[in-house]
Image (tube, rainbow, N blue to C red):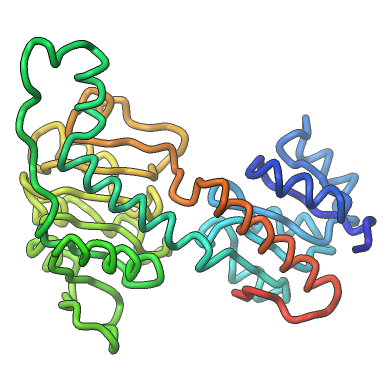
Length: 314
């Protein structure tokens, strides 16, 4: 690879990816710059690629500041941190890392369901604090057979459905349109879906239309015995409404891997034992992150060698 090609990495994401990019390109670490404005003034002309992820990508401002930008390669499947319209307009290519992280995210969704319903984290604390000696832990809720509703039946939604089916869970879903090749029950509104399931899973892409797709009405429809699982993006859920529903007991529980203003998490959730909180680790296994990194590099190499991109979006 031509080591003079400038690649801007938006934020720290994978040491392995960083090292591999360093070997092949002229890598700039955006987060390490004391002044981003100054940095862009000096280096804008030499940056031809941006590597982003679920935390930082390429918004309109950054795209406009980089006149030689040709490709944005995202270390994520979600593209909500990239201005796709701006990229289309300017002929900038965009790639992501679909498929390779599907299994990890779906595994984690099931893990969250079990952790919330069976109070696994709480049980662990109970043993560590020596409380078992004082008496048995309270009874919890069965997972097998619960009705699972999925918002967004894409790759990840389908993988969650397949896993939940192994636990004899009836599956239903909401998406923009009914999917042809599936026996799962389709609901044409999220409120209908929430009214007819015990566990509601958010697994859709974040777009202006799906922002706050889980609002007060949906949470109330899910109800005091219902559980919300979010392995999508934080802004899918109206977070203040979720917090008040959990605090007031209008919602039974929640398993959350994502939040509206990461890494900020509402502190009211910290004292609740019916909530499991994870630091956005859906795809966070060594195996998957390395495959994702290889895909980011593979897309950049393909682009600069004028070969077809491996996972093109734009």
